[in-house]
Length: 151
Image (tube, rainbow, N blue to C red; front, side):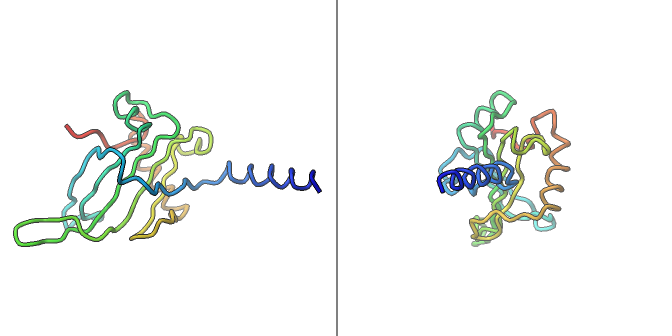
């Protein structure tokens, strides 16, 4: 019985190690805001974009090389007009990049995933993850990261 249990843990650990999904970063809004911008209404990604980085990702933003454990979040929100002011409204999505050189070796060491609306479940299709990687491949010299620190 003990050997069976040990084998079950080894198999489960192996499956987790190859899981192409990163965990949802529950506390990302407490991280450093690296940049915010508004994509216009004609854009396919219209809305406010708030970029967050955990401590490890901040190392990458300052050195150009992101260590394993770096997480970058692009939180997209609708734009709400209140008179002459534009405010961040309802959450549209949370796109997440997580660096793990071994788990995600086939995509430059990064996972690419997204949670829609208020969901905390990362659920991008394989096609969408591939499309994200293909686009970020253009930034290979910047460790696959488009964003930068605001000045």
